[in-house]
Length: 307
View 1: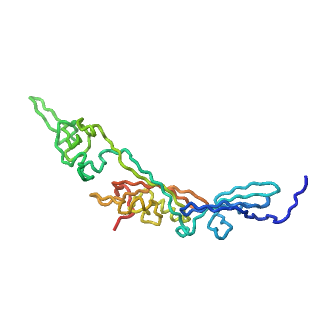
View 2 (view 1 turned 90 degrees about the vertical axis):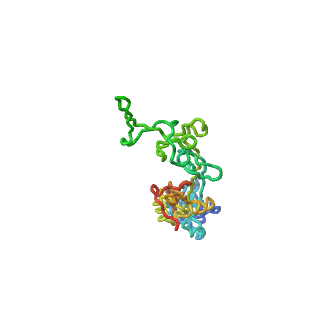
View 3 (view 1 turned 120 degrees about the vertical axis):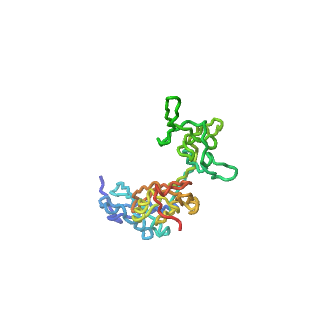
């Protein structure tokens, strides 16, 4: 077997090869696959270490994410490095613009949560489903328990005293039946002549959610996103240093406020935050849920209110 005759560059350090590429995703993330050749005896442990910068000064913001090494003929090692980084022209290289997808559809909700259940909410010729209380007592609906024993009715017939612990229920519009005149527990729709409502308990309500991700070099931004999990907001960056995780085209900030008797309820809820290391970056995956009624501040902490 003939000996190998070595000439030219001894390849004691990895030599970058022609054909390396740069790929931008349009949101600020830049990736590159770059190949090198070196002698098979070269110690590559530090060279392929995650976070090592790209050798081209113009792309030094790119850092090693993962690598592949193959040992070929003639004592040559081929090293393929995947680099990743944030374009410095995007947000000073601190984070990418969020890449967002929206899911919109209908979901089953209890009929009593419909905004048009007690009061007319849609305008025009539409009327409320059950109508406004107080409601009239009606023999059509089922008997309901009297909760306060002091309200029990005693009926005397001859020498027999009967204590009545049930009373007639109350009726609103469309056969809507309640346990007391001011509403109370909703029993159901009990009049068969209202065929669109009889026996129904749920309706299909619009629901929207936004899921997306962005990359950042800032650990503080990751911590901030995690601290805001479970909170509601009136704007699309949670009044914080986060980027706009809900796009502006989904609606202006004034559309993300719901007014009712209890004040303003923010309509955006940060419902999920997941973190993943990506090279020298952090990938933040998130989900935002939208509610037209708003998320009650008694249950979900509000991060801010409009002044």
